[in-house]
Each structure stands twice: as C-alpha cells, then as structure tokens.
Length: 360
Image (cartoon, rainbow, N blue to C red):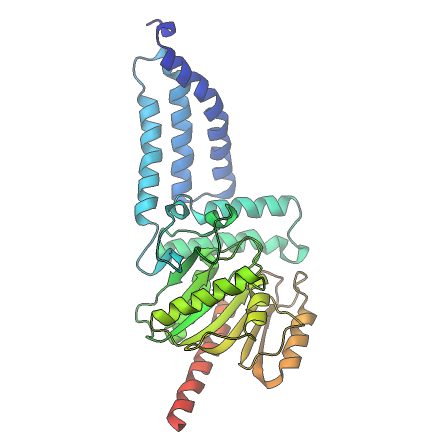
C-alpha cells in the first residue's frame, strides 16, 4: 500500500516521533523509581502507543496503536473509578466537590521521582539522605497494601489550585468513628500528601478519631492569611459534621503553622484539645493553653532539635517530648515509634477528658 496516499498515517508517524522519546523516557523512569502498578500501565501503554504510531505508515492495521491507547484508557478509567475508597477520600472543601485530576497519577510515582531528583542534587540533608528514599518506598508499600488506590492532593496543589474558597482535603475515617472527635493535620513544604495523612490516621485510631488533612499550597505556609482561613473553614466544616473536639497536628512547616494557629481564636463550638508538632515549631509563637506533643529527630538539621527542645522547656508541664535517632524525616523512617508515641499521647488526652467529664 502506498503510504503517500494516506496523509493521516504520516501524521500519526510524525506524532510518534514526538511521543516516542517521551514514552521511552517515562518507561525508564518507571523502572528507575520502582513505579506503582498504574504507573507501569501508563508507561507501557505509552511505549506501545508510540510504536504503533511509528509503524503505522507501513501497516494496514493500527493494532499497536489501539492496544497502547486502550491500555492508557483502561488505567485512567480504573484510577478515576477506584482511587477514592470508603476510608480514604479526597474531596474539595468547604463546598463539596471532587477534582478528578487528583486521581490520575499515583502519588508514589511523582513523589519518588521528586525524591530521587532531590537526592541527586543533594537537596536532602546529609542526616536523611541514606534513609529517605527507602522509607518513602516502604510507606507507599504499606499504604497500597492497606488502602489500595488513593487520590493525592499534591497534583492540584502544584498546579496552584488551592485557595480558602476551594481546597482539597483528605478525610480518613476509621471503621467505628467517634461521633465528635477529629484530628486535623497541616501538611509541610512541598504540599499535601495522602501517605503522611494516612500515617497520622493510623495513630488517630487510638481514639477512633477522623483524620482531616486540608491543603494550602506547596510552601505549606499555614501562618499566612490564606492558611489561617483554610484552617478556619476546615474547622467550621467539621463543626457542621457534628465534630466538637479537635486535636491539631502538623508536619514540618505544618507543625510551625499548627503552633502559631493553635494559639489563636478557634471557632465557637470547637474545643481544641491539644497540639501534635512533628519536626517543627515556632520559637516565637505564644504558648498554647492546651497540652502539646513534640515529635523530633535527634539529627534534624532543617528544624534544629535545640529549637524544639527550647519550645518544650518553655511549655513546661504542658509539653510531652518524644525523640528518635533520625533527621528531619523521622515520621517516615521511624514511623512505628512515632505513630505509637502519638497514639499513646492521644489516648492519654482523651482519657483525661473523660475523667474530667466524670468529675463534673
């Protein structure tokens, strides 16, 4: 067959010249980072599609093209339909809604790619370099095993779609949730990641609390006007759901934000029960009137341990100090110890609340 009589075939061939290198690059990256199942499906589908486009001028059938496109469509359909389970849900607040964009790419793939880039460019502190990527891989393995496919707010965050009027929020509900208690977690620099929210939710099971993780932006600047409004609207939404008691947690920049915002006015009808500051605090923040748990890595250079210790000393009896032999990413590479410390502290605070209620 004379291919010159089929301009569409040649157009497909030219398109393949552009798609092919990109697809091969994604395939190599998938192998390099150890991609998720859906990530591999997208990489393989891209390669097969590009092969079909490149060979079509000499073929009477576009079987490879259809196969590659079909695989891409199938992976996309599975992620759109399944990346939002019964316990881990990602939606938009304060008005209800869903950004389906957050379901298209597995959080593991983008996060591990960024982690490798940061490691290669030596942007990760030396105290964390050896443990960071293996700890991330382990965290995503555990998340996939327990929850299956999940969405990620990180995509829309990096696209600049978060605002106090419409922000993505991860909500994780235990099997038998408390009717009036929630843990709110503020994310750190680089955005909101479902895997961190899920890790905190494992600790929050100790008091059967819902875990709610709103998004502000890639900087994690919760102390800004937008950050404060986002937290306020999160708490108002929780109040509308019957939640009355809240523990405010934060990771890295999110911990700084929780420390600052925890000392400000809380909406009427919400009782702030305590703060959980993980690898972050603000030495200048006013002392909160509630108990505070500080979780810290001994070798942290991004949020120096001496600052955290000074904060704990200033808080006195209100502070509970927990330290592990790690760097800034202690919540990842010592997840079991950190989750257990947080669970124990939450259980103790909930118990003291119940004792107080009985005395009244």
